[in-house]
Length: 143
Image (cartoon, rainbow, N blue to C red; front, side, top):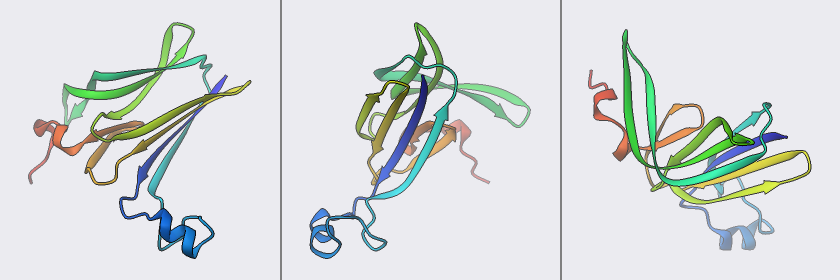
């Protein structure tokens, strides 16, 4: 099966009451429900999504020429699995997560994750959202 992933950043100022009163219950340009959305499609076979809470995520990369690995605590990670083998991992800091839903159809799995808008965040890797308070200080440039 293919897998579609949606991460939504909720707008803290959204008012369903206002939407009901002024726009037939729908969000509008002046009353947006989401500040942004990221959507990904995984074309590799995915048979299930394994949600794990309060996991450690190993953020890896290069800072200039120097390789680094920083462990990010308290992450909600979604392992996209083909049988018992992970093919990809996406997720966010637990403090960011409002809710999530996983829906399986005949030929597709859809993961929707909703993140709270009041918490600043960083998106250093596609599909990984880290609350700013948990972002490694060693990776923050001050210049």
